Image 1 (cartoon, rainbow, N blue to C red):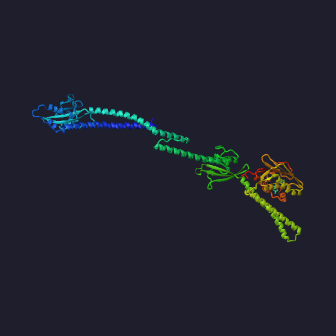
Image 2: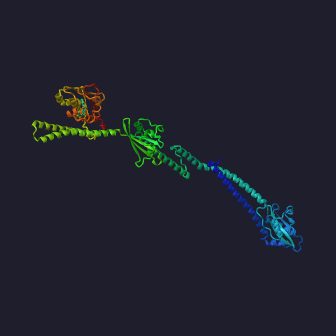
Image 3: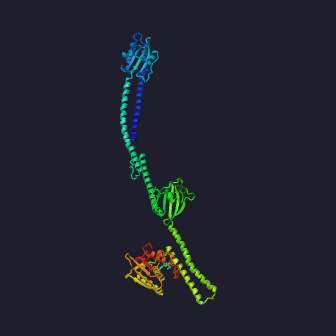
Length: 595
Ligand code: ADP
């Protein structure tokens, strides 16, 4: 019940008022009683001590005087005003100095039954008795006097009734004040609770909302006192917390997106070996689903590379490496513990190195091819030149001439290969810019065919062109595209036995493209080799190609040029014999920035 601050406040204030009133009351009552006692004795002193004449008259009787008691009584009655004797609460008595018996006084009834008080007994011994205990229900003074040779005691006793009634009134007043004070304390506690507790309650509500993750609520700051400062500090703190959380969330999202879209596969395992995180790349590379907390754990997936304990403590390098061939892919694996000190788990990064290996393989093959291609003509040149040197002019001039022709043609071949390699290397490094300009597609084809006509005739081929009427102008690098067409047509001439038929046709496609097809009825290319003929140095029949002066680079250069124009070049799937190569090109040339 007294748990709430409001109740506590009310209780404290009530207790405070009660204790304050009690202390004040006790102090007041005591002060009043003390004051009365002091007043009493000072009055007595004023009459009996400070008025020596009166005391002298009291003690000395005239010679003719016979009744001393009456004289004393009368003298005292004359001074009742000074003594404060009213005959009700305060009385005086004249007592016999030897026996203490009542002789005269203002109240006979009481006088007869006077109790022997401390002061009275002192006075009976002849001393003044003027020491009243404040706790007693009366106050008194007893003065021994001797008059006419006889001892008397003047005894004045106050029943303290006046004090008691005053004290009673005081207590009533204090109780009333107390009741009033309690009412005020209740009202004050309400007021205080409004100014003090309401903001605290609001602050508590705000803190609860923040704890529940709702940062939107801002607590109103009404005052500038400590609670106001606390509230605005709390608001600042909540704002700071919100922005920090936002930053953390953003970072998390960034990392999450990165994790989701990274090309490397990542699988995280707990220290017990269960999957705690994985990304789509990892699932794709491993070719299986990797559910979090699923049955498949570390041991099943990577146990063959290293046991979990070893992966958790990989030693000085900080990681373990492994590799795996899976589904035609070469995977490189990296096993590293995360939060090493606490051995929180193992992170496995999977890197697909298939392409890299393939490229490396191709590079090696390419170097081997280049070496081989260059070595053959070089060997020929060397051996013919050597023969010429050794014979020292003894060879018939015809033979010498043919030897020198071989040396010439082989060196031309080498120059040809080197030139092709240079062209390809320029494409690879992106240094080969297209010289774009609009030109007539039909005219370019005609010119190219005419240039090949003589060579075709040499082999007894018929070469025909079939161009759709109204072929448009196209945007492109005319020289390069002519180089492509020349290569394709000269291949047809080369790889078709003498007396063959070569057909060059072209037309326009629906989607702003033009097409060109070169077909022959030659030896064709077996299906199995068809997908490889655009590779560098790939030749179906090496001897034949070399014989006819081919380098095995022509079609790969052609493909690079067509790719740069954002077109396509491919073998048309047609029944043998012969081969049909088709080129498709966008009429408007390569789109800006994509070339
Ligand atoms: P090359 O300089 O050897 O002709 P290419 O790159 O132009 O090199 O051609 C690659 C290979 O494709 C050739 O070696 C040949 O085996 C094959 N080829 C190209 N065109 C034809 C064709 N029209 N008929 C048959 N085979 C062809």
